[in-house]
Image 1 (cartoon, rainbow, N blue to C red):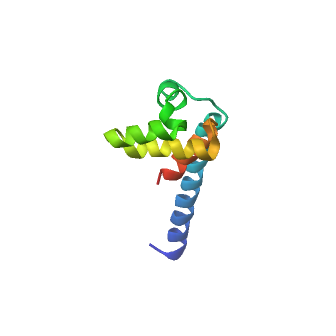
Image 2 (cartoon, rainbow, N blue to C red):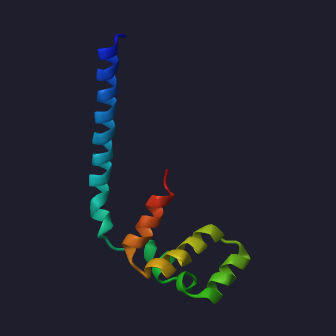
Image 3 (tube, rainbow, N blue to C red):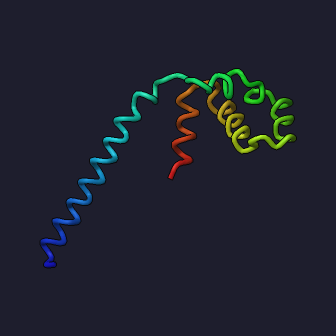
Length: 95
């Protein structure tokens, strides 16, 4: 493959990557301003372990999904019950 063909291939890969990234961001944008949904109410908003340290310690002691519970509690400390904050944490944990 000559140099100009390699450059065209690299340029096409870059454009494809940018297009896919833009498509994913466009698909996710409505969720940024959204609300909690479905099981979020029972597992996050209405669960006393999300905002109460005594209940959180009880949950951690029984070993039921400790990292998830700690994550919800940390999100609540950072963002309160703002869904976009919880979403930001989710996005930051994805790679």
